[in-house]
Structure formats: structure tokens, C-alpha cells
Image (tube, rainbow, N blue to C red; front, top):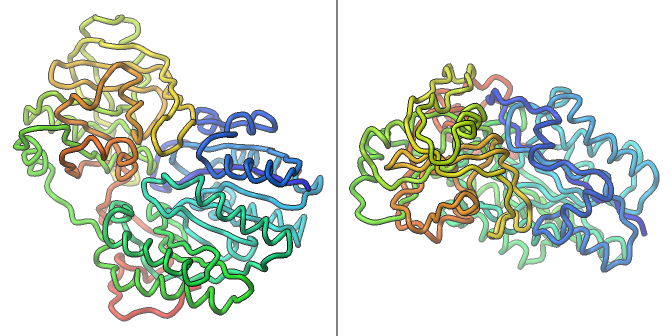
Length: 496
């Protein structure tokens, strides 16, 4: 047998000013052919799970591309075609199945539904090809994605520590279908519900219950059941929550399972909204906590959702209120890194840090913060993830420096990176376990590496294009009416 195994992943924040060209993918990791296989074999990723299953089957494998980029603005035409073209060429050469590691919230210049368009193109070449798809929990599921897949699944954890597990689950469904043991069919459902990412942590309610319900549906006979939180910062028609279930030959049962899941989500819609707190008040609460580490989340500038990672609002307030023994991960500022590298380790420098990026979608100008400190560390920014999320993957932060102000140690990077693993600190000589405060530009993924360390966690409502304040976002393409942008009190009918 011959399998095509490929990865094409990007979570597109249509409000983000960060350019998503091919270089953006190369900075995180973009590999072709045998290099793709070498990069991800043995990793805890769906791609790695697919390769393991192929070995079990003794199948020949084509790995045309494995590419992922940190969330940012719409994917440029050339970058999208650079990923899609080799996948289609591999399918055109002939194969018995395709196993795809996708995200599910890619908006490109040429299509608002990057994954659905890819799958439609594959189907045009091979109408009957068995196709398995793994998506992120934040996928914005579309009709095209469902119609053109044989079986589709999403992560059940946020932070995403089960990527390999669900990749193997959907892969085994496809392998059983190839052997004639089962006949997978899917049912999906959605509601006009734009949940907020800060309320999608799967250790928290209401998502904790929603995930339990998916497992109950599987226990009752579904081959796979998924609730997608969706990615609300992608302003296009299909953004929002959905559910999909895979059954052995019973589409009505799969549809009924998906409908039950979404009815439960709709009932909890008020709990899927984040309640803000004034920044000065939240920082003051943090200052009153006697021992740490205390985790401080600068979530409105979360690069893992498309933030610029150079908004200094929260850092400035933490400094103003005099919090001490703070480690920050991270501030994106290649210019500042160059200045610190030129000065050298041990030198005292005064910098205009951060504030390099304007954010017109939320009417914010980039505003740097003048800050003085000692250059503590200089590194190449490369390290391997050892924690439970992206295990085995090499992180490439680019040239990296640590600025030590005396009360705050700031990791400054040349490439955007969300701090979901303690390696962001340990790779530059900081032991996060010993700090009183860890200020992280993250929403929920920080939990993968940092939750076991934190004695308390405080969300700090700063500024940026990953804000949870819907009044700052000008939605023009999402389908309407939709909750909470519109008042919807009566349960809507099935939307799919």
C-alpha cells in the first residue's frame, strides 16, 4: 500500500498585522519529502502517529510536506500554494490513502477555507480516496472539510497534549476501513456560537464537561467524537463552535451524537464568555500573593493566537507597581536582540524595547518601553521540547537575549514563540521554579509546561490583537446573527 502523509497547519488571526509568507513557515519548521519524515518521526504529533501506523501496515509512504507556522495574519498565496502543490502532486502519482495533519482554521489570500479547499482539490484528483484528517481543537469546521474527508477528528485537550493520541485514533479508523472491517460515516452539527478561547481550557468548565460528553459518545459506540471550540479571531463565515462524530455505517446516529454535543454547548454559552478585570487591579492582586511562582498571563498579546508579542502594556504596569523577581517570556524584538548582542554579555544597556508593530485592526500604535538592564544571556534560541506538548519538536526562537533589569528578567526573541514549555526559560539559563512571578504571553497553552509550577494564576487584560474584548474587534465576514455579537436567547436550529 502507498500512503500520502502530510502536514499543513496555520491558525489564522484575520485581525493580526503579522505577515504570513513562506518565510513564516520556514521559521517554525517547513520540510519536504524525506526531510519531513525525518523531522517528525518519533514526535508526539499526528504526523508522527501516522508514520507509526504506516510502519505497522508495511506501507510505502510519501511525505510531500510538513509545514507549520506560528499564528498570524492570512496566509499569502505563494505560501499556500507551496504547501498544497506537493500534496496534490503526491496524490496524483497514486496512493491508497491520505493521512493529513491539519489545523482547521487557515484563512488564505485565495480562500477563506484553506483546509476545505485543499480537501476539495484532493477529491477532484481522487474522488474515492480514503482520507483521514486530524484537526486542532480550535478548528472552524466547514462543510467542505466534512464533505471531502472520510474520517475527521480533533484534539480533546487544551493545551494540546493529546495530538499523537487522536492522530493515531483517526488513523486506525481509516486503516480498519481499508481492511473492510468498518464503514466510517460522519455527522456534524454547529450553532451560531463564537466562544472565547480563554474559556476553552479542557481542565475548566464548561469544556471539561463537553469533553467528558465526547468520551461518553465514544463509549456508546461512536468511533470518534469531537467538540471544536473554534477560533473566534478568524473573521470568516464559518468561524465558531461545532461538533463531529464518526460512526460505523450509521450516519443518523453520528448526526444525533453531534447534535447532543452542540445542544450542551449552547446551553452553556454564557459560560463560554470571558469576564475581564481592570489591569491595575489584577496586578495589585498578584503583588499581594506572598509566594510563587505566580503565573501572570498577558493573553491579549498571545503570539499563539496571532499576537505581535511586542505589546508592552502589561510589562509596564508590572514594573510600575514594583513586582520583583519576575521572568518574562517573551518579547519579540529582533532589533533589541541585535543591540544587546553588540553590547555583549554583562553590559548595561538602555533600550526602546518592543512596540515595533502597529495594529490597525484594533486601532493601536506600536509603543516601545524605554528600559535599562544588564545583558544576562545570548543564545541562538534553539532547543528541543521535552514537555507534554510538541514533545520532541525543535523550537527555533532565533537569536535570543535576556535583559535583566534587577527586578525583571525578560527573554527577548527574534522569532515569535508562545511559551508552552519551560524550555523557553531553561534554554537561556533561567530556572522558572525559583521565580516569584512568571509573566507569559499565553492564554491556555502555558499550562502544558507551567501549570505544575504555579501556586496561583492571574489573567492580565492588556492590549493586542488577541484581545477577549469583542468591542475592540470589527467583525464583517462572520455569519450573523451569532452569539455573543448578537443577542440570541432562543435555541437555534441545526446550522450545518
